[in-house]
Image 1 (cartoon, helix red, strand yellow):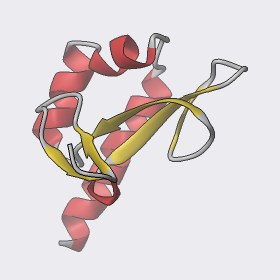
Image 2 (image 1 turned 180 degrees about the horizontal axis):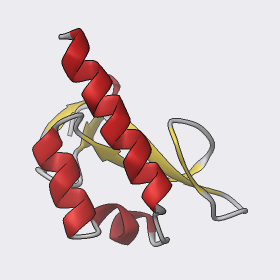
Image 3 (image 1 turned 135 degrees about the vertical axis):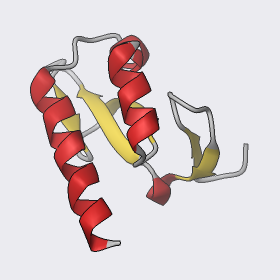
Length: 87
């Protein structure tokens, strides 16, 4: 994989990390948050199909080895709806 590229946990697409949403399980508090902090990270395409698959199959939870709250998914769905209205 080229430098500064990441893979979507849902569709497995490889792209520059700026094109993805970053979900982080912070260290040492084990809290899952978006776009900030240091710790175990998972990347997700800003696409409804990827987000739906990740939520249905708990791909974020398995990748982060932590429980992902509904609030995180709600925030991601809101981000998706705001980016869809902008474009």
